[in-house]
Amino acid sequence: VTTGRFDTDTAIERGDDLRFAAEVTDGWDIGAIPNGGYLLAIAGRALCAALDRPDPVALSAHYLSPATHGRADLDVEVLREGRGLATGLVRMHQEGSLRLVVTGTCGDLSTSDGPTILRAEPPDLPPPEACVPALPSPRFPRILERFDMRLVPESAAFAVGIRHGNAEMAGWLRFSDDRDFDAAALPLVSDAMPPAVFLMMETGWVPTVELTVHVRARPVPGWLRCRFVTRFVTDGWLEEDGEVWDEHGTLVCLSRQLARVREGSPTYGSG
Amino acid sequence: VTTGRFDTDTAIERGDDLRFAAEVTDGWDIGAIPNGGYLLAIAGRALCAALDRPDPVALSAHYLSPATHGRADLDVEVLREGRGLATGLVRMHQEGSLRLVVTGTCGDLSTSDGPTILRAEPPDLPPPEACVPALPSPRFPRILERFDMRLVPESAAFAVGIRHGNAEMAGWLRFSDDRDFDAAALPLVSDAMPPAVFLMMETGWVPTVELTVHVRARPVPGWLRCRFVTRFVTDGWLEEDGEVWDEHGTLVCLSRQLARVREGSPTYGSG
Image (cartoon, rainbow over all chains, first blue to last red; front, side, top):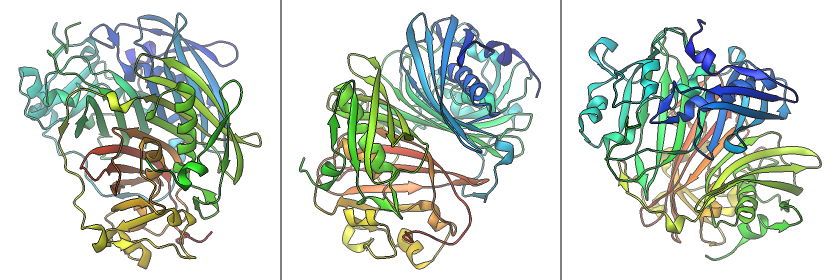
């Protein structure tokens, strides 16, 4: 796996007693707020390091307060160390405020064995060159500079104000610096695309309450094929379900988040 | 809301310092092991009590070791108390062994406000009287005694050894003692039906690694309309996604679990 900005921006420094320090940079912002998937990727790194397991398998994050740029401290607690899987808890705080708490199970996905039965295909996307590049612009969030993101035209419609109601954000994703994806980067990928609900309604920021990421396999180098879908907005609550596949057609990640939404002017990229 | 066995079997006794005690009964077993959703319901009760919020909104559980019958201790830690939502952490242990750890956000669902847009309908089920009752039998787990469960014929097929491959477990659910459902019972409902993967393959126990439940609304009294679907079994990992609707056609709960599966003789009800 090649390295790149993702690695420097999620680097953790190990201290005593399973305490880690990280630097939350401004390169992964939505508006002025660091992206929740970016924070989860940092927490996942600390957890895997503390548990001495290579891959995050299931990470459940509850977001407590918006993060800021600068130093973050991560306290890890080991809850269970099995032969294969190990489970722990991470608290990320900044200047005394808890930003997120993550319970997570880590393991070695290269040794998974058991049956494989797929009841659905990878999303059927036009090739990347036939999709719409989500280009960084003053109106769009900084996190887009980190990716080469190619949305299918139906998904890109939100950018020109079309809210057709089919809340499916689908497309291709690579890092813009050609860093390959690995299991550690999939928590970030799970929260990197524009919210699918933008295709349903005008809304401001869509704050994540809870995000769970299940990593199924390590992706091979190349494009990721992604689809994020919102089916149910109820009383201002919504889910966003993600599926991520690699270039070999392997399902590498499922994600689901619970978020809040309010009607209002679109603020995507306003920060 | 009427009371019943669910209430006595999930009752918690409050001690000092946000410590709670509960009695894990044998009435909700799968084989000889207490059901994971039952344990989560107990943890959710302790969390709501400690946070002084009526409803569990998002509970994320990681299962660390199989529970046994008898006393369980629950230690709750408050992580954040906001105006509306509050978040905490519950550790359930028995005789020094950690059984599960739950991070959860609780609130008052009767005050949710915001837009409602549904992109999918409740599952289209034949009426309960045209479905197949999942009757308790020596071959079936004890938890079925607690429910009046009516599976659609396609879902009930697993009970006669048919594995048609469409892993959708759908049907109606009530408590057998006519206790009404409320938000507190939905974590149990999220894990109460036979695993959908039984329609795909012969398998033994399907241990849950992680279970997240999002409660969207308090159900009205009556039947719940449930659908649990597994689409991807990869290297022995699977997800089971649940949707639960009440008799008014309100979406009351979404759930997702990550579980392990191995090929083998069916052991459902063997315990």
